[in-house]
Length: 486
Image (cartoon, rainbow, N blue to C red):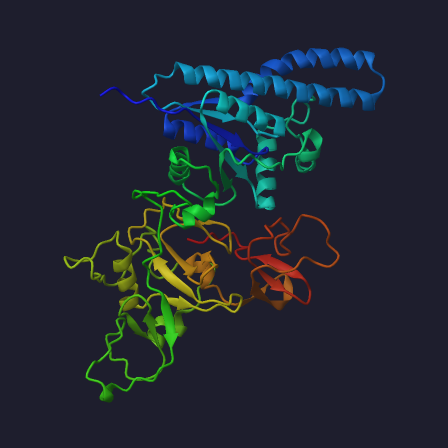
């Protein structure tokens, strides 16, 4: 049978400066084994000629405002010429790929101008190609600004080049949409679009898989990556997805959903004796926890472990070896799926072992959160390198052990340390006790975008939890002594 001709695919990046656009374009090119064309490479060639022109204009033009307008016009003209060249190179590269192979090309450009989007649409239709937009957004403004500052220190962002279309200061970056055109334009319904919040942690393999799915689908879809990944790349409208096992993508769909029951149970009135799986003693009366999807039952005291609710910042969780940082249990217990014995890579074996050893509470209630948090452990084989999530409290990445809210429409996830922090603490820089606070209101007299820790006087991310004195508006990092949670 003759090989079937494959439809060309154009993957176009979209994103402003320091949103991670180029980094992910290179990752996609390596994973998908296809070429990538960077607009900056072409623009640099055109801008060399533009520098000479602008130097001549500076000598002839005395009106500074008019000179700046001319420079902006030349930058836009140079951008247009560069993008037109990139599109022509992309078409030629796709033509050179044999028809029986995957015809994919990645265009790495910010797509700042709507005219560039329109040119992409015309080009893709002219060659019968499928167009997929991957838009990188930095929704966490604080993290975005920190990236920009680091790029300035590395010298990758120049404040002296007057022919660059990229902003040279953080303020210019915020004004970029008005400086060159309307960045927030609506993309056509004739394309598929994947929006990625690059200030959130995610795995490269997951992003590549999402792009591959959008390339294969017959219909066009606009999808938020983090939402789709949280749904384990579930079916979209009119499309069926077959998701292979991807290492590091963790599903909590089958984890025990524990609810507190206040039903009084009298053991003498029933021939069936329900035992607590943690202490193995009968549950005769009083409140208990039950799983809504299986027969798991637990004493309330065995689940909440009130004597083990808190960890100080300098303490490791009790299941972490202080020297090797590996996960250890005084004794291990197998789950029902591994009758042959304990499996260190099984989350159910980890769940059973923590229940029986009573190291940390299985359910935690925080004064600052309205829902219960469930302890989860994806594996007991802690390598120290795997990163599954970004903690909503401190912003650090976390691995195999965490607390998570299982309530519908609430995706709160915390390090074990952050979930077990004391609700109040003292600070040597303040006379009042500080309370654990998720998102305090900004001070009444503060209209700036910068937030500071009053203990160390360093900047802090307003999205991260703090210890806070509401009366004095005193805010302190969760781990201001430099401690990093595990």
